[in-house]
Length: 132
Image 1 (cartoon, rainbow, N blue to C red):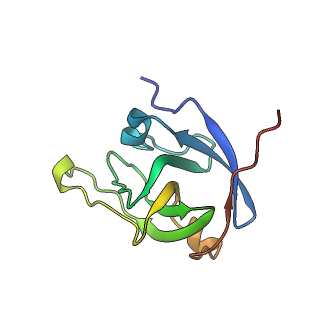
Image 2: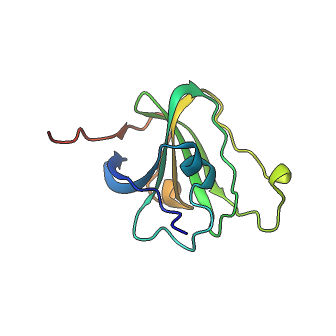
């Protein structure tokens, strides 16, 4: 079974160019990076939401820890660093991580990325316009 979303996107965070999987569908968002042993050569995953909200993230079927970064209007609005995996936890017992304020996007990165790059609330996130 192919669990990889079909689309990737280049983005910039802290002036670092990242290649992220993009979760656009409900299925992609539900599965996320779960069930993978690694990022398969990409830097993380981008979740795009149609509306601002305190969108929750869980570590369902994750095999490696993550930094979770919430974004709104191109700015980092909250960060959950080094979120641990939850092996053998039932769906109803998974911890739901939510931002303190509304966001329209979430980026999942390998644990420690935010600390290594001194990522802070208010930092800029940019998605380059695709050439036509």
